[in-house]
Length: 293
Image (cartoon, rainbow, N blue to C red):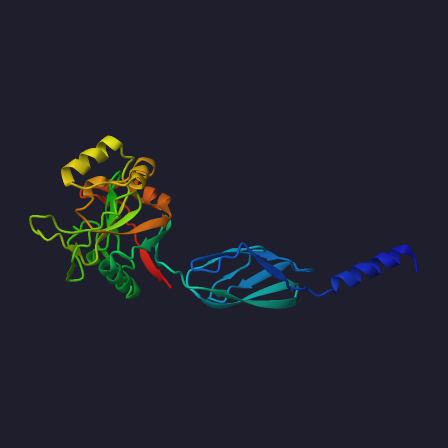
C-alpha cells in the first residue's frame, strides 16, 4: 500500500468519526441572578446547540448565560457534525438570593434593584404589583435629566402620544416610611406622591415610583440641606453624594425604598432621552419587572 493510499484511508476514518459533546462551567455564580460561562470542550464537531433548561437556547460555541430565577436546571449541549450528533447534560442548582431583588428591563438595558428591608410596606406592595404583572408595558412617562426618571402610572399602558400622564394609580396610597439611612443617591428607588398641600401626611402613590439620576453634590449643599431640614448626613452618605451624585433636596420628604445595584448606565440613557412639553419622552420607553426569587 503506497503512501497516497494510506493518506486517503486516514481521511476516510477521520470523516467517519462521531462528534463528542463535552463542556465545563466556569465563573459560576450559584445565586440568582446567576451569571455562568460555558466552555465547550467537544471533539469532532462542526456546530453546537445549547439548551439551558429554562426554555432558552443558543448556537454559540462558548456562551455566557444568566439565570434570572432560582431553580434546578438541566443544561444540554448537542455537538453536531453533518447528520451525526452527540448530547451531554449536566444539572445546575441556582439558589434564591438572600436579599429582595427586582429586575427592571427596558430597551436601553436592564437594572437590578435591591429593595430595602427597612421599608417593608413599600417593599411588599411593590413586589406584589410586580408579581401581578402590573408594571409590564407601562412607560417612563416623566424624565428629567439631572433629576429622575418616573413611571408606574397604569394609564400609560398603550397611551396615545398626546395623552397627559402622571395621575394614575392602583386606587390606594401607602403610609410614608422615612428612614435617615435611605437617601436620594443616584440610583435610589423612591415612591412618587402628591404635593404636601393635597397630601399633608406625605403618603406615597400606590404604584408610581422614580429612580434618581441627579448630579454630583458638594459638602456646602449638604450642609445647607442639613440646616434647613434638621437632618444629619453620615460620612458615607456625603461621600456617595460627592462621588456618584444624586438629588438630596428630596431627602426626608419622600420614601426611598430601594437602590439600583447594577445598570446605572441605563438610568443615564433614559435620562438623556429627548422629551416633549410635560417631560414625557418623545419615543416611548416601556418597562418589564420581575421579582428574582
